[in-house]
Image (cartoon, rainbow, N blue to C red; front, top):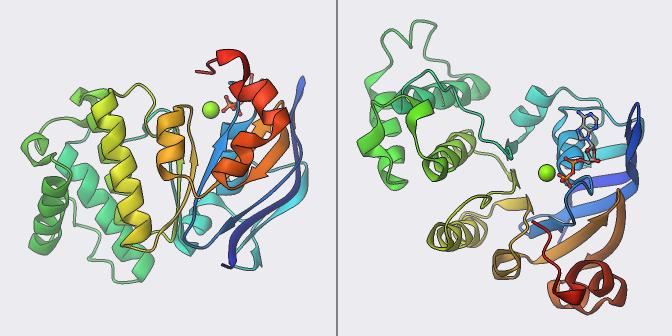
Length: 256
Ligand SMILES: Nc1ncnc2c1ncn2[C@@H]1O[C@H](COP(=O)(O)OP(=O)(O)O)[C@@H](O)[C@H]1O
Ligand SMILES: [Mg+2]
């Protein structure tokens, strides 16, 4: 498999704390790579560096062979990197339907086939139909006219994922996609992520705490602890690593 995304020797610090210390990792095409590690390890910060929300002080990020370390976040979205957030980011004052229409309009803009600036007053019929059928796929069609801010936590996460997928990313980064979900919803996320990878050929990079979820979908794992990569490899290999065992799986500890 070829490398789609590569982080090399990434260092990032806030004024009072060094968060990422020479972090290197690769995401291969069509894998589901999961980053695990205790709270505060630097997982979300690494996501910010990879997606362009934040610049590292040193190190490089390459995507599809191109150095994107200093490329604006929105240009990375155009290149095919989609991401969701630990706390869902939606257009919360807009209806659920308008959220999807906005995402589809962004996709048309990216493709260079924008449907015109007045779409929001009068969105094209095809766009509304497509939005409704995407909502139906995610079981959200009945909520189409509700304000996004009134959705349940699980539905917000689902809608955010739908919006991200609407842009047809090649790589999708999910920061704690199952956080705060009930076990059934978690299993649904595992099934969906596996389907996206196996049937739609997507590449996924996740952070996740729930070990049942991790071992249900990861093809490779990277373990971060205090801003350093302490292990990387196939799930079983990482599980057997004595250092990982000690700090992460050992003593029945739970890192929520
Ligand atoms: N905006 C910020 N300013 C200062 N420190 C921060 C900020 N955001 C995160 N941190 C610190 O950076 C470290 C890593 O945080 P984070 O990347 O969110 O870890 P994780 O996602 O693994 O829980 C933590 O010590 C956290 O307190
Ligand atoms: Mg985090």
